[in-house]
Amino acid sequence: MSKGSYDGIFIVGAAQSAYAKKTDKNLHRLLWEALNCAVESANLRWRQIDGLGVSSFSLQPDNVTTLAEHFGFEARWLFQGLYGGASGIINILHAARAIQAGDAEIVACLAGDIFNTVTHNELIDGFNGPLRDYMAPFGFGAANGVFALHTRLYMDKYGAKYEDFGSLAVAQRQNALRNPNAIFYGKALTIEDYLNARPIAEPLRLFDCVHPCAGADCIIMASERVAKDLDVPLVQILGGGEMHNYPAHDIYSLRGGWEAFRDRMYEQSGFCSHDMDFAQLYDDYPVMEFIQLEGLGICSEGDAARFIRNTDTTVDGDFPINTGGGQLSAGQAGASGGMIGVVEAVQQLRGEAGERQFSCRRGLVSGYGMVAYGRGLSSSAAILGQA
Amino acid sequence: MSEKLLPRATQINQPFLDACNDGYLLLQRCLASNCGENIFYPRVCCPYCGGGKLGWKEVEPAGLIVTFTLVHRPHHEVLLDELPVPFVAVELDVGALIYGELVRRPTKEDRLLGAPVRIVFRNHTADQKLPYFEVQD
Image (cartoon, rainbow over all chains, first blue to last red; front, top):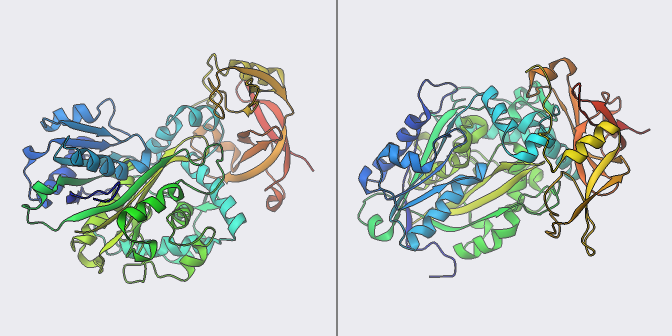
């Protein structure tokens, strides 16, 4: 086993609940739906699960421990994601280490939330101390304002244009048109629609911003001993990493932390960035996808706009990005935003992505979150591949 | 909501809030001999060296706009009568980043990045002034 590798651990199941702009279901039920489908996709039985992770902003006063009781699990390993949209990937990476160490054998990694624009703004107001006390008293525009500030700076520093962000958003919508679970399924988006949309927090316009919604996502992981008898397509974690508060004291570096661990991640995997068949990026805003493309070494620093101009990122293209539509076109169900790309990657690698299926062997997933004083503090990424 | 949010007053940030009401900018400063960084927002320790000895120092209320946005969709109803809100990130001349609003809508938007600003202390609520920013020509 090479140093730091995730050998002997497999992703054996993946599923999503229904995504909806509005729901009369409660959050526990949505989480159960995703979990139940994922357990089925793994050919496992409910009672075999001995570890549980959950990432959710609206679960309180409940938590992963009370959720385990609600579901009736006798769990010997629990995880709660406190890294915003970086949590989903961090959950699978930490679960893999627990399974490697023998602390658990079959772990369900859940994420989900129920939000609309009003409740999402309320969440951001109280998200953490520095944001609450030194940004929210002003008309900062919540998350939209925070990332408008980064987008403005990115455009000024690297010469990216509205059209560059727009072409990525439009390509993701084309992917969403093949994803019946996307909240914008059946709703085409043109570059003119994107450019003519009303301003939200300049330079951001409507289609730069995610639509808060309800939904849940689940990944099931298992040891080799369990996985080899399941008779399901297996997916491996080939490499991964996380980084927080990087670079410290430099809010406007236009970096997110991926560059701090990407070399180690690629080394673990035995592959380089050019070997990736797709990327499922954390798309709270297009500018963060640009920064991820650069941080993950898909293109060089400041070169994402040119890369997007020259690359077809739809599922029919040369380098598909956010192949289920991403959060921008499938919806942001709170902390599920950090897991939606993992579920999409696993379904693609298992050959279960329906009419948006494309040929792939391995690809990148990345997460980002915990917006605090001026920026998101947490980044994560993993390389997933067919076993 | 009828009134704007304020920073929650604590023993850590009270000197800053009091100084705002008295019309001057008070920042924490690390007292470690090999550090001496100016710090904003107020904290319990220095985030540069980890030291726990912090003092307060009046600093020049001036800086440069690092980046800005015009917010058309604010997160609170109370802000709806002043749209769009010009929200700025300002690097103070003494080296700390602070956020706030411009006192008036910019006339020359294209020249805001890097523009020098001075802080004016304005009533944010009836009882509390906070830093606002005025672009210097």
